[in-house]
Image 1 (tube, rainbow, N blue to C red):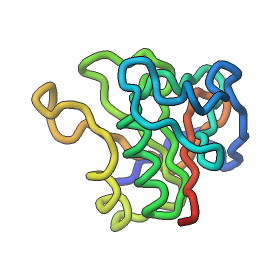
Image 2: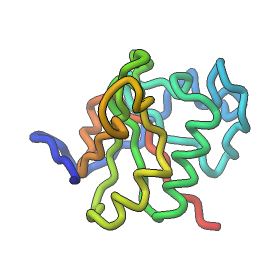
Image 3: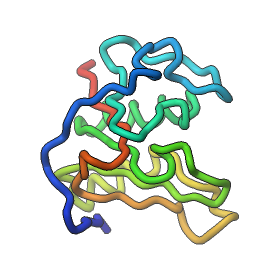
Length: 141
């Protein structure tokens, strides 16, 4: 089921976080994974930090965005770096239908199912650009 929140806007602002505008540091401290190339550096909104995601999480989200041809935003505690071991994943994919949602959900990171029920993912349909977000735009292959 696609979720939508009251007050979400459709206008996505491109704001780069000064501390994470360097692609070499984009993979995060705990997983050195490959850094994104200059053409697919994620957009980091206010209050968000790319350092909160591991290199493998970044790669999975970017690959999913490339596959469906739509931007995918990480929001909530995963975007701010406040996620704990039982935190779920919150994503925004605008213009998504249930078929695409089911197709992409298994490609995206999810919390350990042993810590809760189900895949522990929420997929919303609209981004609030004033709140923390990290947006992965699709890269044409």
